[in-house]
Image 1 (tube, helix red, strand yellow):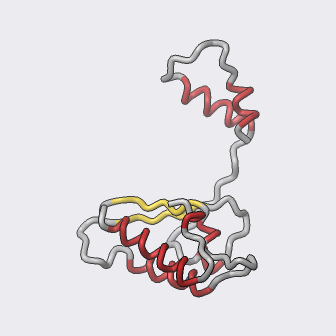
Image 2: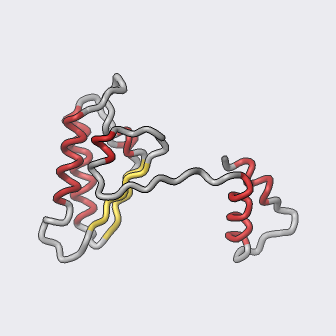
Length: 133
């Protein structure tokens, strides 16, 4: 779920959309729900925190596996923001910080990924790595 889709004019709209996406995902248990750009959910239009939406998210995450399904549902939130709301971050059970790979690391990754593809010798992984920063 791209959280750009969840942002609305008022908190109630964001809450309803968020609840709908989480509950819809739970019908597919076992599953992983990926909330991309989660930092957008916790912000109001003035760029301040929306505690009401963050509280709703925390409650949804706390109860995600209490809806009677025998199968687990895993919710992952991703963000490119280096400094996210502490309330938003603590809504999740675990936090993993990852630095972006360097150009050399991206080139090596691309080389490894392209070994299984039928790619010509004229493809420069260094060039591609420069363009994927």
